[in-house]
View 1 (spheres, one colour):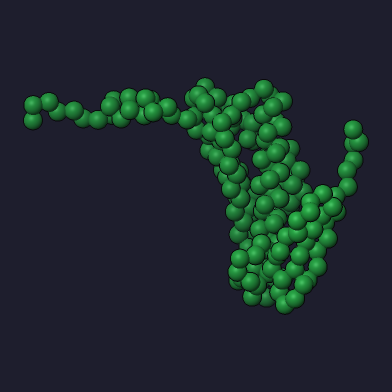
View 2: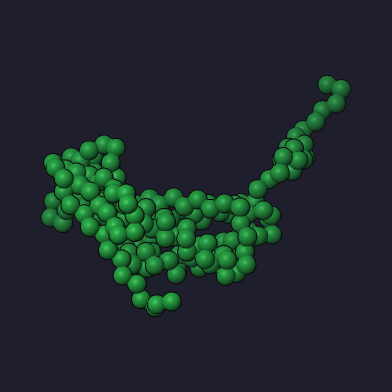
Length: 165
C-alpha cells in the first residue's frame, strides 16, 4: 500500500453563477453555485457546503477507523458541521469559526466515556480538520440507546403517584 496519495477534482463555470465539479473516481458531477446570499441559485451545493461536507465525511470515516482500531462498537454516528461566515468590504468573505457536532449513539451507558474520548481523538487525527486553519470547536454528544422497557421504568420512577385521590 502506498504511503502517499494524490486526489484531483476539476471544476468549471457552466453559465451565470453556476458550475460543475467532477473527480476521477465518480461518474457523477456535482452542480454548484455561489451561495444564495451572494447572488447564487437556490437548490445547488455551494463551495461553503462542499467544504463542510468534506469535513463531516472525513470526521465520520476517521471515527469509524479510530473506533475499529479501539475495538469499540457503536450504534450510530451523525456529524453536523456549522460554519459562520462574515462578509467584509476589504477582505471579502471569511469563515470565522467551525462547529463540529458529532452525535454518537452507543448501546450502554458504560460506553459513553470511551465514546467521548474517541470523538476527541478523531478530531485530532481527521485529515480535513487538520488542513483547515479556521478555529474549530468540538461539541460532542454521546448517548446510550434506551430500550422501551427502560424508558417506562424511568418514567414510573420519576412520576408522582397518588392513590385514592
